[in-house]
Length: 156
Image (cartoon, rainbow, N blue to C red; front, top):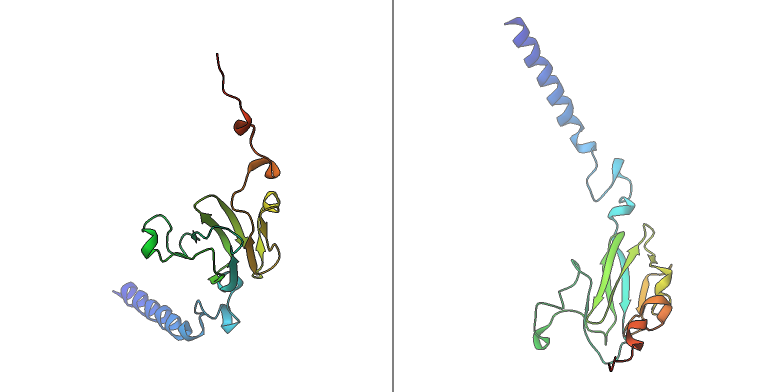
């Protein structure tokens, strides 16, 4: 009986301490000890500019914009390549997808963009907050056509 009473008092003491400390605990918007929001939770304004793609089409960032694969073109809500779009993105890796190609890009903790150097012929904006897609199609090997397309038919 004495042990049970002692345990009950200790439990009440621990619960009381936890309840008293709740107001000082951080919320996800504030970070720890009421500091500014944690860098990995901060959303950055990233502009996607695919206006150089002709003819106009649609694009998507999965999980951020509507899908380009689920609707008919007359009622498609996905962004069009004829307009720039600013998105609020947290640091992390994303993928730009159009009907002709796709590529991954990263939003860094400071809100700047990074992507593979192999995309430099067709994508601009590394180190900035504006991703510019300037090629309609991307070919492997630094923009050179794959040897597959240079094959001649075998006549015999």
